[in-house]
Length: 389
Image (tube, rainbow, N blue to C red; front, side, top):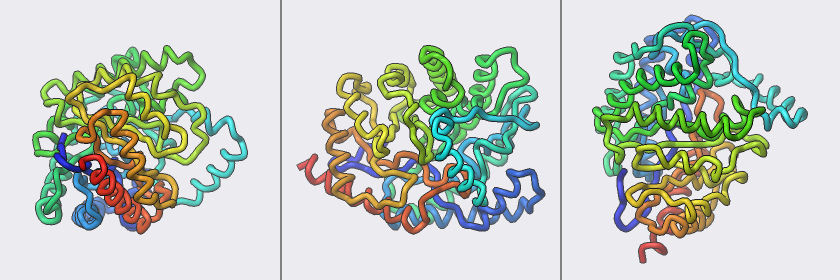
């Protein structure tokens, strides 16, 4: 991962607001309606050029394509993997189920949105999984490369997201393989193609793995913590296998508890998973420390430190409310994290998660997204002045 030298670099978790027409097209397609694929391709390429320019306008250092050409951080894979089809389902989150009135409000809110859902209109695994999306991936990489060349002047590096095998295997229910582990490993083998292609194009790879925390209160909500920890261990091993040909300093692993405004009082504590996450052969671990449920957990890194050559991307900006964090708040958060890590040169400032992980589901208005990111850039500048003085 990029080191700044005498300042803290800034980045984000991948997804950024999409233009309304692109969101409309993605939503219709996700519901099984016929759409103009050429219109999606054109709108997607245009959106990538726009979003790279906006990231540089607000001063971000490590930028992405904003996932503009994908309808979801994970369900884009329904077109890139064989064996995916039919109609599946998804376990309900135990924290939402525990608060019926909140659940009613959430259902009403979601029903009014034109958006792609990560819990509805889901496919399932009905056949052998292999990677069949090389042409689409190549086009996506080419669009970002062109946009970065044209709009990315002054950026420290480009990064590119890809889903964890564990989140795909959790959301897309298995009805083909003899065991979950066999299914997981088949998905990981297929995704190895995507991971290697991304790094081969000169991008840093971010693996989005909310499953490594989120699935505790989803698929494992009614099971012992040990069962969930075994799942995390299996997924980390599968990720490591898929990264066998990729240098670890080219990869960052993003872990979160779900990018939604909700109780989150059934979340697994970071202490319950960090020892397993540390087995991942990645150069950076990316954790959210801005949300109210986990803002205190940076302290865990004092007793369970990362490897000396690893970076920490710290979430210091919330992605589900329209509050604009004050730069001093951001700076304070970064200073506390740097103290826990022991070296400010190993800290990168980031957002807790993406701003639009499924097209149209983002809760933060587009203009406020850019204001929040600008505040993070300013907060990183203030923290750098104090930490590197």
